[in-house]
Length: 242
Ligand code: URA
Image (cartoon, rainbow, N blue to C red; front, top):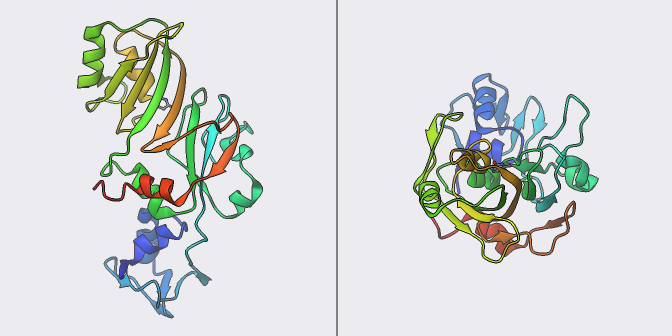
């Protein structure tokens, strides 16, 4: 099936779609030895040879995995201050194959973080067009009232982001020693769960992401990783959900 050239380049994990467009406009991208400067250019990935400044661009052998992120590791591929990053918890072989974190978790947030070298999958998970449900367990300094729970469910205005959150599922979990809420959101605004509770003067004292769509942490220990199954990857692509 034919594919737009910039999408193919990004799907190979070479760079973002926007950057691919810039490379095309700059005349650095060749298809079958001819320069391609038209942004609408389509190729048949099975037949075309794409090179960028002399280097062949090919889809990598796909690898998608999850990490149970511990607190204290930043979600970044490198850190200018030499702090520990989530990449320090992955096997070197996965890094060589070009996996990158999909989205981010705050320094203190724990739980499920996806990594992939599949640019198309990365796009499917992070692009707002495909609302991808993320589930969090938030331990709180005090329990929200029924009215506060309803406000959080309906959507709250986050002043730091300048936006109202979309409807969410928010439930207080029964039989907990301290208040714990389970939150399901389709968006990923910066520090969204913490900020949602802050609007109600409630502090999140511990935050863990437990699932993305149907992919769950299961019994994966904190700090450990595992590859995803084909069924789990299909769930992240939300095949049939569109
Ligand atoms: N919401 C937050 O507040 N922090 C995260 O890391 C993820 C979601």
